[in-house]
Length: 285
Image 1 (cartoon, rainbow, N blue to C red):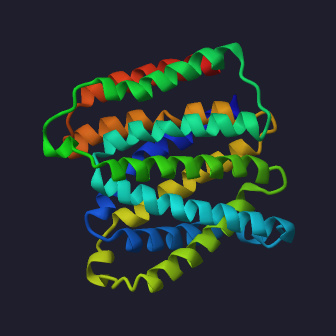
Image 2 (cartoon, rainbow, N blue to C red; image 1 turned 60 degrees about the vertical axis):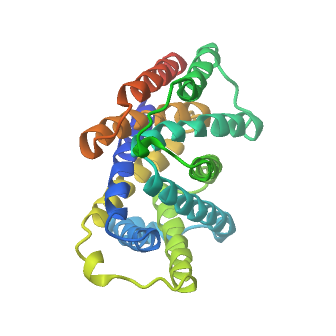
């Protein structure tokens, strides 16, 4: 059960991160936040006791796969940050649940995981909660008007994150959590650095140094990822169950979206998320 608790920690921190992302993007551009967020994350990863020494012992045969994972997350984060900037964070939290479909499919097809009776009952409930959003009459306020392209960005990001989660499970069979975290953060810093140069983004240093949401985001990210990687290291952990538990993040984004940003239609989103929670509980109990 320890690995399940670690995944729950990841889910709760992930939900809080979506709020912090929205706050950080109010002061800085997507590229600025992503580069300095990952740079601070890399520094914190190296400062974690024993991480630097462990990272130097990684088998070089894993490096190409870590680069691939890094590129997948590089793309996923660009898309998700753009989506979060353009939609209510509570709505993004519910849309993010679509990764259940992608991750479960990948877990069954690639890892040949099997669904228990509880999971076979719980998964349809999770999907019902996700798709039931479309059956509610949307708000006429401009806040809830979301362009289709923004929804598509969020869904593609979810698919890429699901692929990354699958790679985590595979890579953790031969790597430690520190090795994976340090190296994939290192490659992402390089990628976002190149993106920063190619896009010719002008860094607003005066605003950036006052954007304290970025270091907060980095701290939450490192803690959450460490918990997730350790959970992946447990042989009995399953991608299908882990994906369901991660959806606990939705309740954090809905609650904080209401409290921090005063977003609308919270009851509707909470009801949809409650159906998802029921599915998660049935699947893991």
